[in-house]
Image 1 (tube, rainbow, N blue to C red):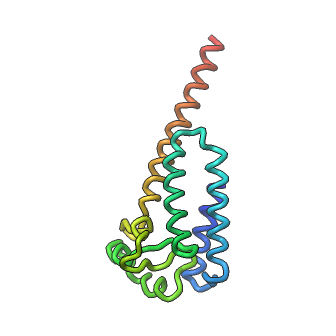
Image 2 (cartoon, one colour; image 1 turned 30 degrees about the horizontal axis):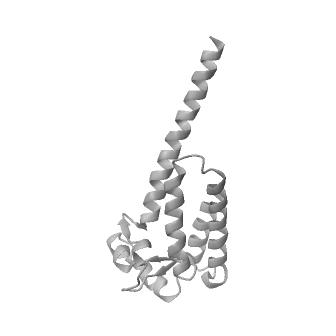
Image 3 (spheres, rainbow, N blue to C red; image 1 turned 90 degrees about the vertical axis):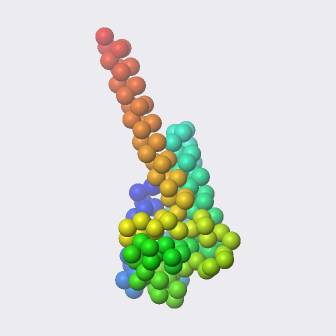
Length: 156
């Protein structure tokens, strides 16, 4: 589920920026499909404590997307700071299928993509998702280690 959602999001972004996909026609529907796949995958795996920050990050990102009519808001300041200010005219005109330019003074713009990195902009929700994925990966590794140790002890 998670991989399919990531592939959908990445594909929509690339196709929209290349002019091969009309963001108004396909972008929002495909974004909704990706969100549904992610929600389903999270709901089925919340026994992993590490996925709770992922769920919180997902909820914040979803709130931002819903508040902006189906697209993640991104600030012009963050785009410039990340070195990708060239995306501003595209986002101001029509968005890229997944993102829309946030307007100054919007009350929920802080949960959108506002944190610049090198050539990308992320949200607080994205940070929570990254922390949660790392935690869940560690948790799964520990579970596997305990199973292997149990199997060794059963044999011995």
